[in-house]
Length: 218
Image (tube, rainbow, N blue to C red; front, top):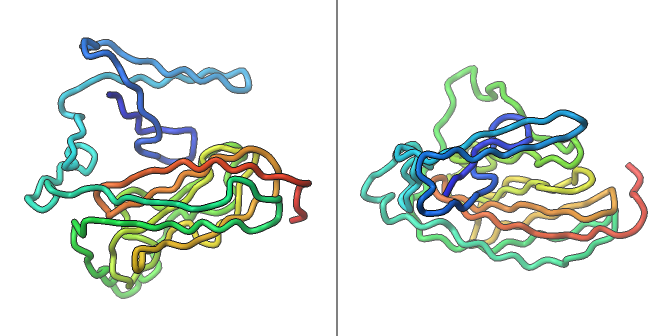
């Protein structure tokens, strides 16, 4: 199975899609071709033993193969939300998360004096139209420094005619819950991507949402 690490969003987005290939694929290349606005781009993929992703993490986690992580299972997330919402109205995103407790939560490290707020790119609601929005990078500790780092949930617009406003894109799981909400200003068909991560393994869920009504005033 080829697991592509790039996407059309800014920077790198790992595990955005998967392609199943025959068992006898061998050393052949798979070419993904995308044409937009008269310009064609190609991405190439092939099978390579060093890139194999095993259930314990392997290549997916930079080779973390401690005895603890070998037994790690990705978090399981369940979402109960309405499939339709009117433009300008808030839609609840209440996620329930169950996890095996591996790896154990670790307290966030205090930054060095003078580096309490290191420079970096911050996700916003101004992502280009119809492109996946930035979420917390895979392997990050969660939404806020100083908190105990455990399972957390991130949200992004995976597909749709416009961006959306989340009350929080990165939510630390507390008592098995990770509440958030989202508001759409432009009607249309959207797909949200929710990711539950324990900082090593993760589970993705795609949520289809139909936004009705006229465009909401900004």
